[in-house]
Length: 437
Image 1: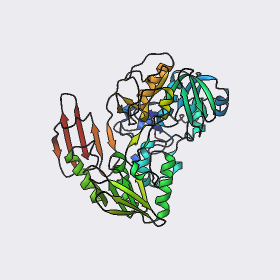
Image 2 (image 1 turned 120 degrees about the vertical axis):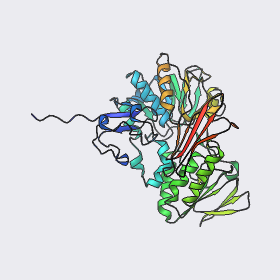
Image 3 (image 1 turned 45 degrees about the vertical axis):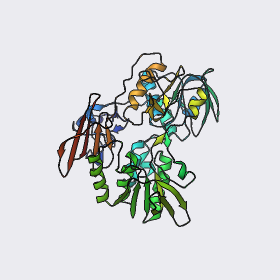
């Protein structure tokens, strides 16, 4: 008798939410399609965040009614605001504990599921939208058994009457989960000018189309932080020229000590990136032919397109409507993730702990699990830890671990042509940076 082939298995990364599909494998890492998860080498790393196989767990999609039907019948239950990584993490965590509680997602976009951290790499890889999106919002809502209001804006939250007002009606909640993310910060001097960003796949798609259509291109990246450096390396292979304008003298200045910043600067220059540190954009002049970026130093750079990578800011509009405390993000309890209003929780890019924003993907799944327990009347406790930061510059891998203390000294433990390792030890914590292989 012929044995049936074993059914494919899905495994989800607990750190970033990436799903390993045995049918697809991970060809970029040498894992052929059809490779069973148990057959993957133990030292295999998540292609998105770099954790190992041990940080994955089995994932079983939830089969449920159509999202339109669920949205139409929604009367009261859990309302999740936001259809990005954080919003879907909250939905999956709640569904993992309760398959029946009504859930309604309200999202200003289509709710497509994709890994936002991949966007800064996608242009260098020549990806398209289809290769980045794993499920559209409708498909994911069906899999999770929830209602979804796509392309719908939240007008406000009435925390006293437990109502969320949207552009498609008002809905009552038993618990509300805010996962509204953050938007790129736009300096006042360049308000109203034509700029690209990679904070959302729709924005990224416009940028990718510009790169494809322009042929030889002159790109200017405003901001030399995490996203700016990742974009610069990935654009270098596709553009005629890439210029990074940064107010600090070195790239990634808020994360790396000076020696590390100089190593990164040397790398960027070696691949043709023009890094203009200690510079500020005063004005951008758009014409039909190109744009002119005018700097405080007096220099003017011609650009075919300009990308904004000056960091993120959380929108306080929703928070203000609900009377939520806000300081660089929605202030949440560090252990329950409840906001200053009862039964309203928040996670992801839109939150802050005592005024310190939480802007990395790694903690989101842990935050989502705590909130899922809370909205279902269970007890769970969140302990925030600084995530391991892996800068997505494949030609010069950078890993940053631990909390960095301003002005505390750094000690070099390895310094070769291919690898720099430095440590910072203080009474508060220990931090390590590794640059290279």
